[in-house]
Length: 116
Image (cartoon, rainbow, N blue to C red; front, side):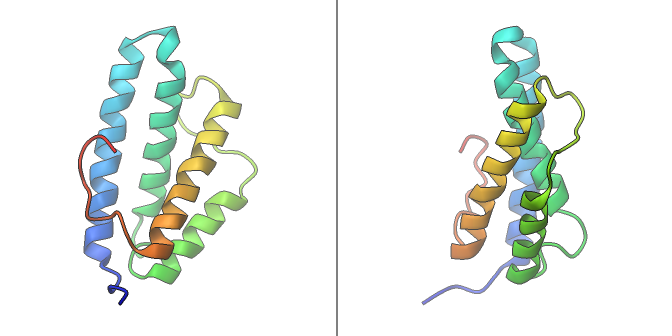
């Protein structure tokens, strides 16, 4: 039996992941050049979470999936603090695809642990 879409849990998860991503960016920034990819990855996660946490997006599974599809249809992504645009775009797509799978199966939104 599939469980009902819990928009509050999804928003709480997006908030938690957005905060964790910002924290991970700070750690990566302090790590210097060798952690720039980690910083881009965390920036991508923050961007996707903030876009998905806009008013109304998480209200239904269909709206959430449509917003993710819109993100994936973009050619490029603009965000602050990005070191490598190509790598960042790849990370955004990868993270959005992860959320597509989570939304499709409606699983994983209960896990708000910092590291996933």
